[in-house]
Image 1 (spheres, rainbow over the protein chains, first blue to last red):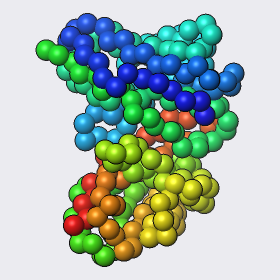
Image 2: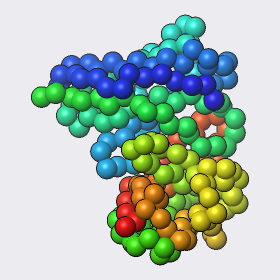
Image 3: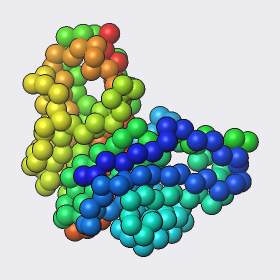
Amino acid sequence: DAKTTQPPSMDCAEGRAANLPCNHSTISGNEYVYWYRQIHSQGPQYIIHGLKNNETNEMASLIITEDRKSSTLILPHATLRDTAVYYCIVRGSGGGADGLTFGKGTHLIIQP
Amino acid sequence: DAGVIQSPRHEVTEMGQEVTLRCKPISGHDYLFWYRQTMMRGLELLIYFNNNVPIDDSGMPEDRFSAKMPNASFSTLKIQPSEPRDSAVYFCASSLDTTGFTEAFFGQGTRLTVV
């Protein structure tokens, strides 16, 4: 699986959009971009995933650049409960579910 | 479904003792994963099962660690004998067997302290 690079920490004001970047310059054509987050003292939680098109769900939006070498997770209206470590993960689309490889992630702190 | 259920939530044990962590995956899920999380190493995959069969245990740190899945609704991770460096939060996760996308659902974790 391709390696990802994320800033170690970010701040965002409550109510504003939080934009979390991820670099994955070695991503290959069949690899997806996944985002998970881990709120303090809880297990990781799936947020969203995509291949090359932008994606949106009830939690967030995922913007993937045309060359797929980077992506941005957008939380449109951040709340205090969005304070967490956010992990960007790149992995293939093969059948089944080999384990996800978590890096250090970005610690997002939402300020009141 | 109540999600992935792990027990106990907290475990404190003395060095040298046997520790058993338990996990009940989401009903119908074909894959089960055990992870360990520490400040130094982050989240590490220890082992995963597909249809109760261990597929990849390359992340298991040493022979003191063993994992079993006797049926589709139960798995254990055992450490014998335990050491202080085993102190960590251990997570269990499960997912469906679908081609392409698989969302892993994690339990609340077991915080293990070995003194």
